[in-house]
Image (cartoon, rainbow, N blue to C red; front, side, top):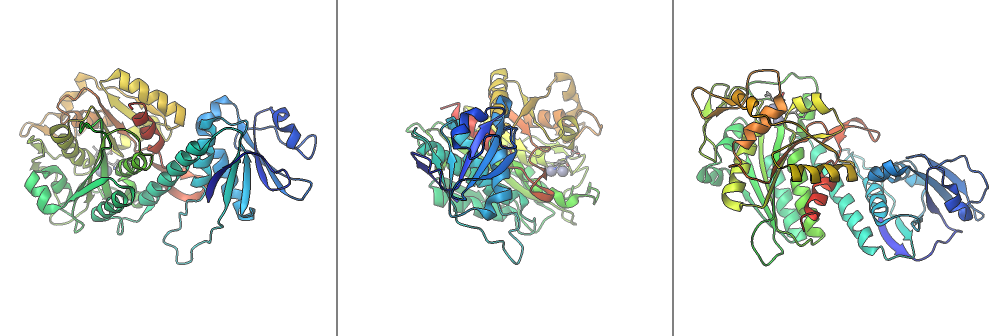
Length: 468
Ligand code: BES
Ligand code: ZN
Ligand code: ZN
């Protein structure tokens, strides 16, 4: 699907006519009948035929509160009806803001996502050109929407990929190709290099798998100054069996999605590079498979870490915080970024707390929290701040090592995980941890099983834009 701008609407050809709730008057001139069965409710659509037998899709944008998720209404229309579309279709965009148009393109692009990548017979897709008709200049917005939607689809494909294919090394190759295609730097640290540099926590988590761990470092630095504005760190567990503290088998297949944080980091760096934004960013992905084997790390082990802090392993299923610990230490020691953000499908606890509607946000920086929260509402990828009270910290005490990876209690799990991470940030003033376990993967109207949501791309990209 390609997107272009045209100045005027040809009402004899197919077109999409967006309309806000109870504002039919604003598009009356284009309607072939006086009273269509349509009131502009959010995410509804109604097909009418024009005088030339051309299709007119009325689509409902709902009320102002729906603006943040406008892509959904375009995604739904395209998903349900694009098989009937001709080569060209127009969108009447005169009444849309720039943000609306961007969301519209994102939604149309998201409807192109092909979840059945591994089916032997592929569904064939039509080549469609969508012309947005507006008297304003909207070329940049169309581009931004296209790249954003494309990146969302690319990271969804990664998260939905099966774990036998999506190994840590595969993620490394994905990043290398992306970096080459989009012109940014990427290095993939493999076993020997990880050992040399002391990524001991990453290595411990990955010990039980034949698919060896990697750390991926991507770098987009267009500015003269080499100072890194923002570093992103992502949890890239390509399959989380729980390790020797093995998980129950129900829904275990969904643990292929435990690299959702890594996918956001890889996607955002690619998108920022495609948009050529004037900001220096580094993305760090710590990737391993948490598997069961004679070589696996055990509960009771004491392991080392990049920071030099020793960790007593209580539960091998609390592996995400271990790989992130090394990623965060690496960032504060070597990158010294102005802002430090990590994203991870870290705890079941955050899913029980916030369900599927918001990521858990942890930080001591209230200004950053406010910005992140506002952007979350704006793009409908919401975050909700959870506490980091001092008192909870005693849960991480170990008698024999510097700290332990789990309290052993069924309480405050997401906070404990966040505070574990905090121990590796060297009190970085501008650090935020986002626990995206509930939002990165879930039910959708477009698949029978759970699948990737694409959460995080718009949130983090807009956050980065707010710091330019
Ligand atoms: N990958 C899981 C967290 C998770 C749960 C992600 C549900 C997506 C959906 C993580 O590694 C994990 O197993 N966490 C444990 C930690 C516990 C053993 C301390 C949890 O939250 O139960
Ligand atoms: Zn786990
Ligand atoms: Zn995990």
